[in-house]
Every structure is written in structure tokens, then in C-alpha cells.
Length: 98
Image (cartoon, rainbow, N blue to C red; front, side, top):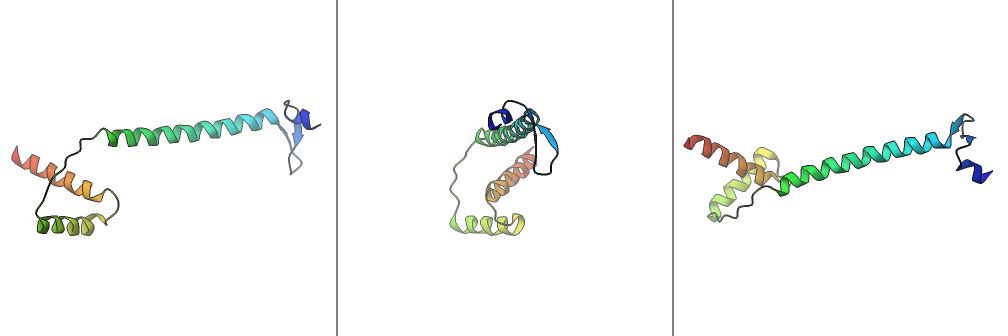
């Protein structure tokens, strides 16, 4: 009987209802596909971040301190907030120069 369970025969679940083993397998694979699609979307998001340019700058200590405190005030101080603040400042500066 144990072998029949994996050969697609109907079985009773814990509630006594009949279900097909293939139906359960299909449901499991659908969930797995959804999870894989979500992982792929996450990787695509990260890849777009990786492709961004990286600039290394040196700032006077006092200016850096002000930037960091302002960033924490405005964005909360989470990971990536400093980059977000610098990006915003550069966009404003570039737009102002046009």
C-alpha cells in the first residue's frame, strides 16, 4: 500500500477526504515555481543595484558628520540610507546646474 501512494493512487488525508497524490505533487510544484520566481525577481533587483556606478569621495570630517546626521534625521539610519541621501543631493545639484 505504501508503494501505491507514490504511484498516483487516491489516498485519504487526515480529514478523511480523498485526494490524488499527483494533485498534491502539482500543488507542491506550483508553490516551488512561485518561490523560484520570487527569488529570481529578488536577484534581478540586486543585479540592477550591482550594475550601478560606484564613486569613492573624500569629505572634510565636519561635512561628513553633518551628512551622516542629516541622513539619519531624514531617512532613519538604515542600511543604504547614506547612498540614498548622496544620490538625492547629486540629483538636486545636477538639476540646479542645468
